[in-house]
Amino acid sequence: MRGAVLYRLGLKVDERVMRRHYGVQVDQVFIKGVHPEDFKEIGNDGTAWCTKTMKWFAHKVLIVRVYNLSK
Image 1 (cartoon, one colour):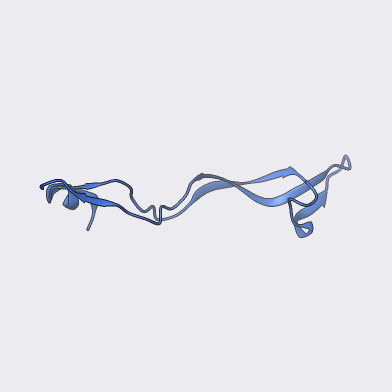
Image 2 (cartoon, helix red, strand yellow; image 1 turned 135 degrees about the vertical axis):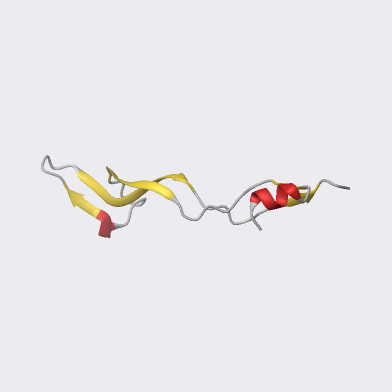
C-alpha cells in the first residue's frame, strides 16, 4: 500500500523505500590501501586520482516501520 492509503487507515509510516539511489560520480585523490588499484589513474600533473567513485545524496531505505495509531 502507498503512504496516502496507509495514512487514511490510521497508520503512521516512519520511513519509505525510494525507487533508486541518488548520487554523482566523482574523482578523488588516490589513497593507497583505501582505494582499489584498478581505479587508479595518473593525471596530467602527475597526481594519482581514484576514478569511478560515487558521492551519494540519498540511499534506498531497506526497512519500513508502520505503526497502528488507532489503538
